[in-house]
Image (cartoon, rainbow, N blue to C red; front, side):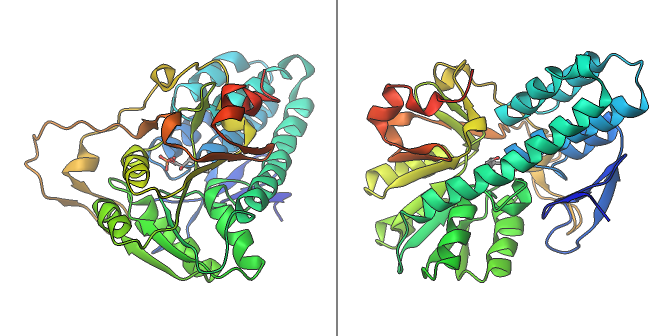
Length: 339
Ligand code: MRU
């Protein structure tokens, strides 16, 4: 029996298993991870993904590896983990927390990792409840990427709000952006909506504007990978385009995230490191459905994994610590709890 478990993680004493998100929704395949190299490969190819889950799984792999290799330089391992995906600050939050325990040994590291897992579960619950407070029966909500139980230790961030609303008997209709290039919406969010019993329709990312022009979207709710001191935030590429379109059509645009996604050291979005990914992801698709290449195999590609949405396009930032408007963000209230 795992001693800790979420929708996408099963933690045992010396190793953990992750639900391989590249295989969903076709196959639910659990894969063992017991080394930093194994973790890096899984995170790089998005078998493990979503800002909170990346950080939590890093904490477990570090704690478990340290227990087996007491003489290694844990700092080197931590540095390697940090470099794997640079944009989501939750990874840095979790590794900072682990590094603070290095001197106390393997037992303290294991306890710290378990505490981070429990914390994320609690943060999910709090932000999801705050997000659900803003939803009412009949709302048609558009979301992007995947922000549910798969991406966290708990109920999720933006999808968490939808799930809690559903539990409260609020009837929603959700539009799921497919989320090119890696289809987190089409593969993972559609699967989670069905699992939660929330009525939804899948759209390609380029359909969101006409959907809003037709007056069919009441709210947009997305997650975040890093929120700056001024409220600018990074999220899955395509989020910025959605925010521009929502602003034009006067559709409220909400960001749902835990305080662990806030990075007060980033003054503005220009300071966020944006991960660039392999061109093959744009030239075609690969994964559980096989490999299809449609572009010329040598097509030059620009493939940023995330984009930055300026604070001016956000209606409110829904964190576990509160719901913040632009004035509260300008006062730095969302940075509460972060060093
Ligand atoms: O590249 P991914 O799939 O890890 O990107 C995930 C997102 O952009 C999510 O919206 C973000 O991590 C917040 S979710 C809890």
